[in-house]
Image (cartoon, rainbow, N blue to C red):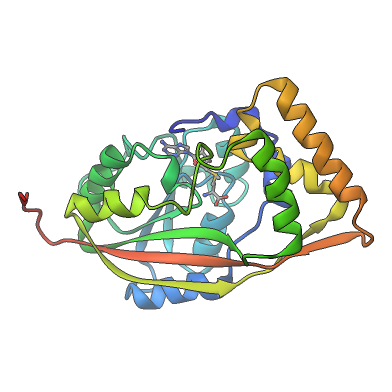
Length: 256
Ligand SMILES: C[S@@+](CC[C@H](N)C(=O)[O-])C[C@H]1O[C@@H](n2cnc3c(N)ncnc32)[C@H](O)[C@@H]1O
């Protein structure tokens, strides 16, 4: 659902309960993309700055683009406000070939893919890198299984926004603008207070986009699941996945 308005979610809950990204993943991205210590990196769809903050802490010259005003307010607590820009993936407010790398964390699947791929290609320098960061979960993790069973009753898997689906991979491949370099996953367990499971789920765009009735019922079921957990904290067996691509030096339209 491109352009979902994240202004309707609780950004404080988003910042508190959504997972961050493994520092090993950020280090690997820096090394594998051959970034110099002060490389200019655009964090696109930066949200509250969960990845932006880590890139900044790693010494990179980071700029962040985010369409939601509420998200941007929180983002300005993570990095200096002059580095935060209003914009979208389909209209990036930067000049041509002005950044060494573009990162997108847990958002690429929400873009209008063809327009976004063209824009990312435009702002990246020749041979620059695109790194897609994702929160991934171990198949069979009991909490994730229980959560998905509830969500599937309200949002059929075939219409849910699928971060893992092949749609974005195919769009990148068929654009002829990027070559795939490598994908890597790093362990990054996600721990949160058990009682806040519903608050975490309410920050998902799929769930926030439901009509009030089903949304309320889904969140009640999450609260019930949280009450069935005997410990004060929940740990979900999770990780950070990075898919790394390199911008082609030139673009030649191919046929056939
Ligand atoms: C799941 S959040 C991820 C935020 C952040 N990158 C993170 O890892 O926490 C998805 C973000 O994508 C942004 N977004 C949605 N559609 C977008 C678009 N077309 N262009 C740029 N950002 C977009 C939303 O406003 C939201 O901040």
